[in-house]
Structure formats: structure tokens, C-alpha cells
Length: 266
Image (tube, rainbow, N blue to C red; front, side, top):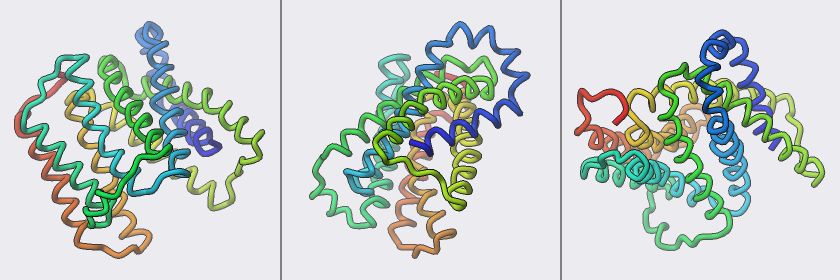
């Protein structure tokens, strides 16, 4: 929980440097939707991160990877229910292919392991976390007319403020771990890349192509994680990594075939 608090504190500080003028400019529009933005920070950032980290204590990496692959499915269903977004057969096929690719990575190329999976407490927490992530993605559609930096500023501040009680609870339970020297480097990297840059890009992506189409790109996360593990952590590159990459990229390509030349929210 300390990591959750510190990553969003760092993001808030960065946003104060780069986005303060934009925030002042967009404040009128943001204020009218302040409750929604705060809720997005509470559920989409703080609760999602907390559930994700807690789930890791009671479930396997295999289960977490596969369940995370359900986020695009939840986004497509939500986009259809809330916005009546058309879901094409190619999109469905594309999502299925990406989920198979994610499962390939999570199971280390042995898809037979999936037959022995059972749900436990951590899995249910992961499902809830994925639902929150999908809800956050769908809610972003409401803020396409303001700067992504302004939107992220409010959401990140909400996430930081609501993460503090969780860190206090962790301290009272005697489980608080303050970062070591190496830990501070990790906090800095998590702050700058996934908490700052990636969130800005994702908000812009949703604004450009809509939540349904943007959601499927989430399944690139475990693929890129594998690539980074091979290139940075010197983990061995296996054939299933390549197969999974082809499946996920192929699924994204397939789901985009009905949208060539189409921009904006639909």
C-alpha cells in the first residue's frame, strides 16, 4: 500500500509541474464532473492497484495473467450496454485470439494447465479489479474535450488521497515496508512510466478510438512484460513467447479491420 501511495504522490507532483496551467484552463469543465473523476481515481487507480497486489498473496501468477485478459471483454460488454457501441464478429474473434495469447504466456506454453485451474479468494479479487479497470476505461469517454493532463491530475490526486488510509491500516497491522535504496528506484520508475506516461497515452487513446477498441490493447501488457523480462532480467525466450506475441498482435489487427480509417468515439 505504501507503493500505491508513493506512485500516485509522484504522479501528482509531476502533473503539478507539467499540467498546472492546463488544469486552471479546464477547471470549469472538470468541476462539473468532479464526483465522477474522484470515483475514477478511487476505484480505477487506488482500489484496482490494492486489489491487484493483495490478490497476488492468495493466487498464482498464472491465474492473475489469465484473468487480466478479461479486461477487454468487460470493456466491450460495457461499451455495448452503456454506449450502444457496435461489437463486430471480427472484434469478438480478435479478443478471443488475444486472450489465447495471454493464456499462452501465463501458462508458459502449456495450455493443458488451464484445465486444472480453480478459483480462490485471490481470483475473485482479480475479477473485481478487472471490472474496476474496465469501468475506468469506459468512464474516460466523458472527458474527451479536455486535456488528458488535466483529467489525470484530478484522478491521480484522488488516488493518492484515498490510498493514504490503506497505508495507515498497513502500518497499524505491522506490515508496512518502507522502500530501500533500490525500492526508491522502483518507485521512481513506476511513477514515471505506468503512473504518468502510460496513463496519459491511454487517455488519449480512448479519446481517439473509443473505449471498446482501446480496451483490447490491454492484452499487450503481459506480452510486453515477457519481452522486458527476456531483455532486462535475462529470462530465457521460449517459443510460446513468440506464439503469444503473434496471437495478441493478430487479434488486435483482426479486431481493427472494421475500423480502418475510422477515428473518434463510436
